[in-house]
Every structure is written in C-alpha cells, then in structure tokens.
Length: 388
Image: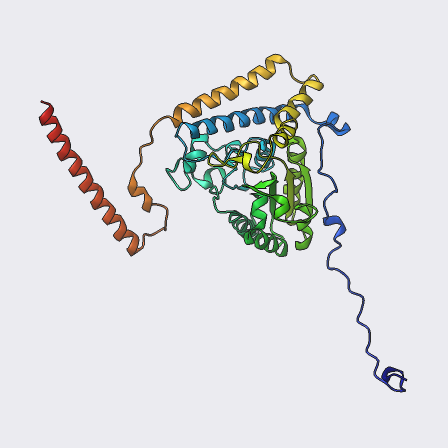
C-alpha cells in the first residue's frame, strides 16, 4: 500500500486546466505568401491603382539605378540599393495617411522619396553631408536609421505617445531580415503588443543580412511566425507583388488605427543588387539564384498585368519611362553640384540648448576655421604677387 492509498492520506488537488490568454490560431500567418498578381483575384484589381503602382515602380527602379551610378561617380559615399524590393518600398509609403509616420532603415530611401521627400535630401546622409539631411516633421519620415533595428523602438514610442495624446496616428517601421536578429526588434514587438500601440512592422526578407543567409539566423517557419510569440498577428506576403503588399499593409494600418494593436508583416522579396557598392555579392550567392528572382521582378509583374488587361498601351508605357528619366536627370544634375557646407553646423540640432562642452568645442572649431582662412588668404596673396 502506497502512502496515497492509506486512509486519510493527503491528495493534492489538480490544478485547473490552463488556458492561453490568446488563441494563437488567428495570429498565425498563412502557409504561403499572400499573392494577387497571377491569381483570379487580379481581375478585380482597380485599374487606377495598378497604374499608380506601375508609375511608382518604374520611377523607383530608375531612382535606384541613378543613385547607384552616382556612387560609382563618387557623388555618394555609399548606396544600399533597393532594386528588386521596390514593391515593398512603395507600398509602405502609400499605405500611410499624411498624419502617419514612416520609420525607415538605411535601405529605405525610396520609401521616403515615395512619401514626398526630395530625392537629394533623402541621399544627403549617404553623401556624408548631414546626419539626416531633411526635416523629419515635414513629411513625417523619421531619420534614416543606419544602426540595425534601432528605429523600431522609436516607432513604438511615438505611436504609443500619440495614442496617449489622442492623436489618430499610425507608425510604420521598416526593417530587414537581418534586423530581426537584433534585440531592438524583440523589445519593440513586445512593447508594442503589451501596450497595443498603433504600429505596423514591415520586415523585408530579402534573403541575406549582407552575406548571412536567413537559414543561419533562424529556423522559424517564417519571420511572420515570430508575431505569435508577442501576441500580435503575423502576415506573410509576396514582397514582389505590389498590389498584395499594399493591400496587406493598408489592412494592418487600418487595424492599428482602429485600436487593434500592432501587426508584423513579412514581405518575401530579394535584393537583386549587392548589399552596397562595397559588397561583392558573388562570394555568397550564385548567378542562377539572382536570375531566378529577376524573373519575378516587381516592375515587370505589374506591367504584365496592365498589358494583359489592356489597361495601358505603348504610348502609356513610354510616358511613364520618360517621366522616370526626367526625375533621374534632375537628381543627377542637382547631385553633381558641390554642396556649400558649413562645419559650424555640426553643433546645430544636438541639444535644444547647447551645453558648456558644446559651446567650448564650437569656439575651438571657430578659431581653427578663422586661422585656416587667414593662412589661406596669406598664401593666396603671396601667390598673386609671384604671378605678377
């Protein structure tokens, strides 16, 4: 006879059945990326929206090729191209209302330009002239974030603060697949979910964190599956299908604005160019892999749909390309102008009121600049006298 079989023995009461706080099923993404182009649903797509997306995609591709060329010419220090990812960039900007905020990463200059930012201002950081190069409040585009994923907690903080103030604002934060391995990513998602902040997280999964493939970062079924761990819905979408990305992001923004909380969207796409002009992508991926993704080009996918439905003719396609060329020519001309830089601007926009240390440093730099100018004038006068 065991102890529990003895008369009067203590028998612990079994705990009540545990129930999860949230049913995880509705939070899980689809098994396959959501698509519209190439499916029966494509026939119902609004023609004007398709034309709008096509125009932005063509201009976006031309913007990428022009910025890449400027890097080769020495006009940019570095350029992280989004060629192949234009559908994600454009959809992120178009899904937002004017009052909303976009939080881009360093690769997302095209999203900022689509939102209305001057292309030259968007590239100022990459030229090395300013830390930002534009007023974030003008277009509600946060500074381009070079550190990985640091923009995500900032987006959550702004969205949470806006809701506390009663402002009808949504923040859309962009990040690459490599950024999901950073602590900021997990902290931002947890913070957003707990506070039901009106934030949409867009992960552009382009396959590589520079040279590290996604398989070396995570064995999760998808990055969208990570959403369920934080209690928010995850969506998986074909990142090269512009109408599909726009629909998913628009729905997530609408849900956030209505008080439904954050959403994690993974857009499966591909970076056709190297990580930056300083990267040799041939060392970690094959030409065959790149060629396979070129056949799923986001620009061509929308163009084929327009042609299939007789929504555009040859003249219409030519007009879109000509507009893109005019944009590229304007960007090229203005970027070829040498900027007038004032080193004293280093001390602007650091603090609302300069600290004693900053004032000391500013005076030191001012004295150095004055001495250099005087020295240059003196040498110039000597040279003039010699020439005469």
